Length: 53
Image 1 (spheres, helix red, strand yellow):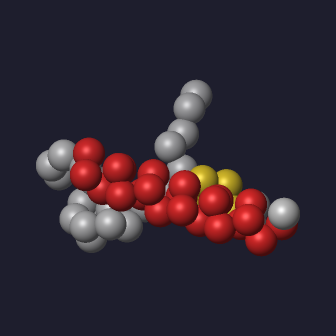
Image 2: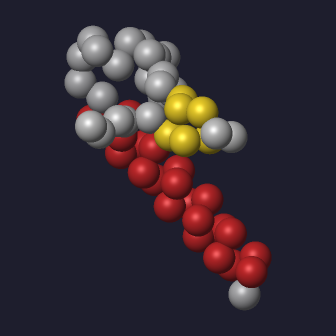
């Protein structure tokens, strides 16, 4: 069985609303939201890797 939530602090986070557009995940296309989320994650990881080096 697969899940699409995140394991955080020992419990699953299953979000009904998109964290980018605040619309229900079951309604509409969230391709732009996904791209924005990926860019934010990459930016955050790049910043973290520079701070460590």
